[in-house]
Image (cartoon, rainbow, N blue to C red; front, side, top):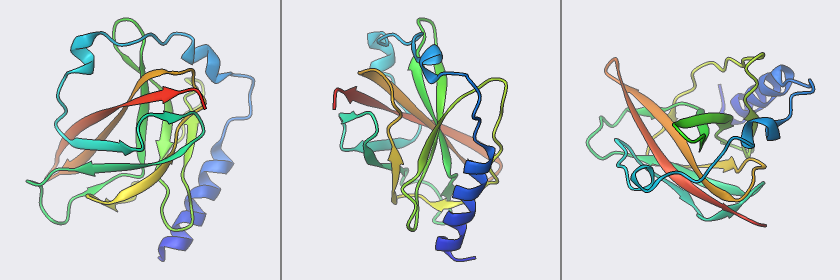
Length: 165
């Protein structure tokens, strides 16, 4: 399947599954606080970066996941978790879908009453993929991602500073 067709199918599946209910993403985001210093300086098991960073809500930025000691055929999934610090832990507020081909990606607020299942799509590591910064208040957020390598999962994260646009 071509990347263009795959991107179109993903966009269609995601749009068809999107919740149009009354749940507002601000109800989740209102719980967000600035993370403590030990969370800001903690180390990730994956090297991840967002460029540019800082970015404004709604901006399209590039997300890269790296790790030089992984096999050449290692891949990353199409989705990652957008998280904020809720005062005690990192809480997932949005699912971030990488763009590829002609698709710029999407960001969908988490709604506990409605779950979206996206089939696993393996994308090359060490490549930049566009993502959309969710519409959130300025502050420090985290993108959490994971890759499957030889039946084990490696989890990583990167911090993103969201500024007024």
